[in-house]
Image 1 (tube, rainbow, N blue to C red):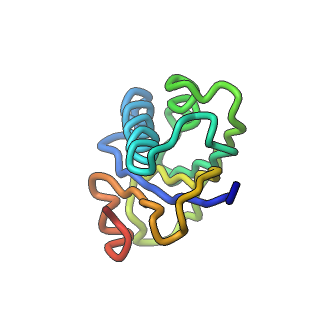
Image 2: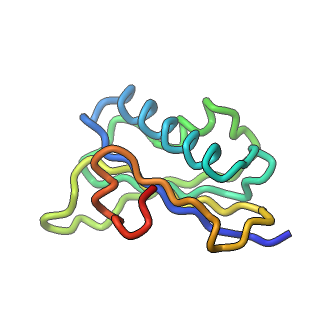
Image 3: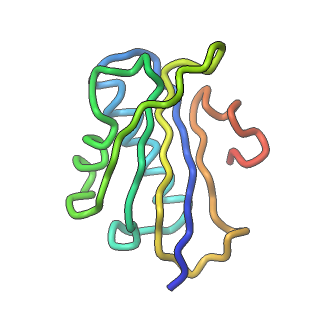
Length: 120
């Protein structure tokens, strides 16, 4: 089975625990839905958060939505001057028969401006 990587991001309204959990859960759900995936298809997920998001680990949202045996990792994005604030990103590795050209990357809310070339 081929392995593919899917990118995604969501901009949050605030550095609050519930905002991080809700926004990340929405992002994960959209990636799964748009790519017709189930949890068993997911190999691993790397989450990053901008340095201004410190109220919760984004991976907790994935755990709450059923990613119990999927390896998850959180990291902090590089603190670049002028970068978009309050963004959670993900890089999800999956097993899928979809060709690379049919992978649907997901950019939600204000994060759609990050990748207008591939945002759905």
